[in-house]
Image 1 (cartoon, rainbow, N blue to C red):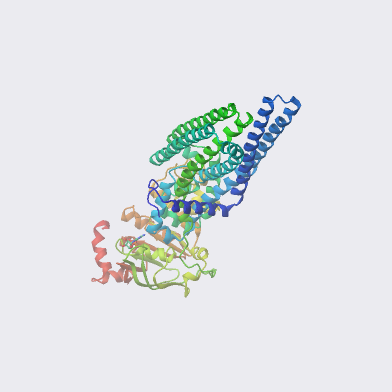
Image 2: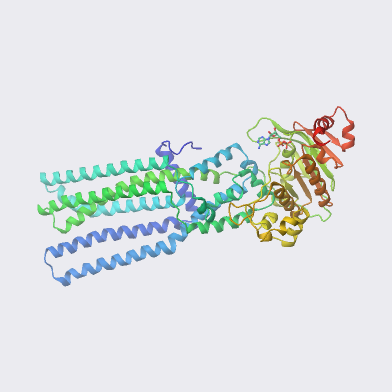
Length: 627
Ligand code: ADP
């Protein structure tokens, strides 16, 4: 992983970055490069022919050729200019523009999709977290692929112009070289020195400009612009998720991918109509444009001056002044453009290197294909068999030699102090991670063998750090674009939100929060919990898991929510997690975890009888909060 965009990197690494971004986008659509190359070729031909024809016309005028003879190259020049310009612009408007927009959309979309779909264990790994931060910093500059395409066009154009200019200049240079005249040589040396100095000056300016660009990252988009158009689908997802990547697990568990995709592609399209330039880089760019214009002008001036001198000396005919001045300055301007755009493309490709690195991460978890048996009677049995697990990048076991069978239709509570492994157990059960040792079995089959989507469908989970999206309420409950209205309303009602729902002007279509829409409603923490619970009810999965979504509430309110939830879940298997023992005392089956191990299991009454047990100790320690 690279460290800092402002640090110098070797040519080889630059080339590798450029090659990587080209080959990735080339695979998306080859024509994003072929068609522009054709357009560049047309432009180069146009420039070279213009030069040659203009020279011919000037020569004819100088030699007092008859009008009807002069008119021919004039018409040819005009027609050729018109046709080639038209062809290039049709190519741009009809093909290149839309094709490249699609490549950009796909590129951004791939990143968003990658992040959403990659193994959650990777999303949560220190490596991906760092990479994620890197992408955010790297994308602070510029507009991603758009700049790379511009740089590509500029470099290709410059190479073409270099070849054409050289071809035009060559015969004249030959005349000068074979003239054996000191004046001729001197003129050429002076011209080369002036052009070279101007090229160096321009290159230096470009270098300063790029350094300034690096030291002045793009301004943030103004909030009012952000609200309407969101820069990248990637950014948009993060906004929906409140900027917290680990909430991706809700998208995994509730299969919210299509919901995300729909919104990201819509927003991406909207964004294409927007050009929002950073004030700082805009100002810098303006100054650079001025400098580029001035050096170009000075180059041409020097070219004409010396060429005119040659013409006066009678070295070559007057028409060649245009050819020579145009082509010789063309050579230097092309060299300068290659240098400038190489700098630019190096920086832009480097900015995309972290994104490409993310795109190229391979999933690690084994993905089985076995279908999950659909059982109307919900007779699913889950068993943890000697399961041990450490989080990526840590040496400590979060769960150690953990064995447990879940009895169908029962309520089970998992209790224990913070950090004892309760949430980890749920994450393993939902296959957000795989254990390093032992197995988790569904009806006797290792859960790794099942098709992930089908397996996940068995669980409705509400995590402590659940996340609602800044999208309409109904879509939040369904975690989908398709909302079963009556089921969503019923789930919200069951979760205790009937009254609040009545106060919402747009009902299920009301946007939550205001970071996407101004008319969104702000909801309290308690209401958010209820919506999250409604989402779990809506999913109607055979296993319901509540992992302390109520942690911010006081113990009594938590107890109330847990016990009322218990009446909602009917004949489903429910697992309640809490570090507060009181919340779960209604459960027939209480499992006590301590330092990643199962230390006790039984009902509240039996566990309290074991005075040396962890449960007894914890109960007494917490008793002060609820007696
Ligand atoms: P509980 O739910 O009982 O509070 P957890 O299952 O969240 O406990 O945590 C068990 C252990 O794993 C703790 O030591 C915790 O610090 C550690 N842990 C939890 N999540 C992560 C993570 N993403 N990366 C590294 N360690 C973690």
